[in-house]
Length: 314
Image (cartoon, rainbow, N blue to C red; front, side, top):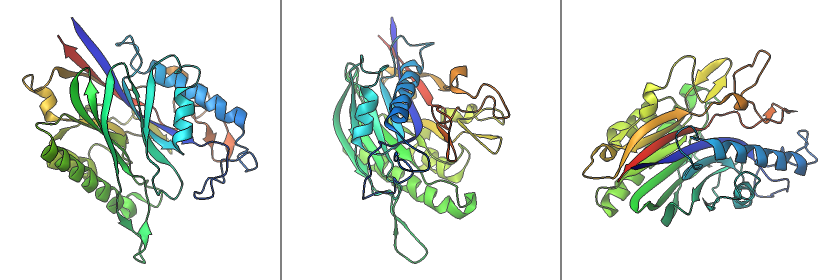
């Protein structure tokens, strides 16, 4: 008899509450803004995201994901609202969240089912970037969480690296700096724990074949199953009618050693069920977004979730 656990990552596209936070640039997401971000729209998004999360991996596993890394959450409050929303409140989810100094006021977070995952440690690591004038350029922290998944210790590292908005080459150094931070986190884990099982997940804003992701594979001895999934007509987001696989989950190579772990990797997938997509028009098949620019569409996110399944042999 074997048991499977789903571990997922989801960039949930600007999950902001409707209150003004004077410390962040959240002005676009207020009832008085051009986007008219109202309580009704906020609650609708929570319900829809909860519906998605509850179904990730359901074709192979009876229960919703044991662990889900999240990107683009404004604060702890919105993550708590998410796990208390209609489709998730019946499960025993808890959260890990730290406020970062990101200028847009968005962070990463982790939600986990306390029935199967018991957290023992969590920590946030800053990615140090500077602007051309030498001043600090603030971005999302890297979140590291250690716990026991059905009694086996694993370490999760959650990421949301700098975007390509100013150009891929122009911003590459930022993602390489983030990769360097993750490699340092992995090094710390290897010093502090014996043969640590590590899962690195995130919206990396780079493909599996870019320098930043390859450095994680090479320097931290991580395996990237999403290399096999990346194709021209499949990805986790679509920009200018091109698919990109920026959302990925990597695992330490000791997951392939049966003497080292009770788990083995059975699946790595993009969760792109039809209900998550635009169903007509020129954007048919692309992620059904909450907003396109300032126009409210009422969808889920501009990203599809990604997930892996770990099979546990008795």
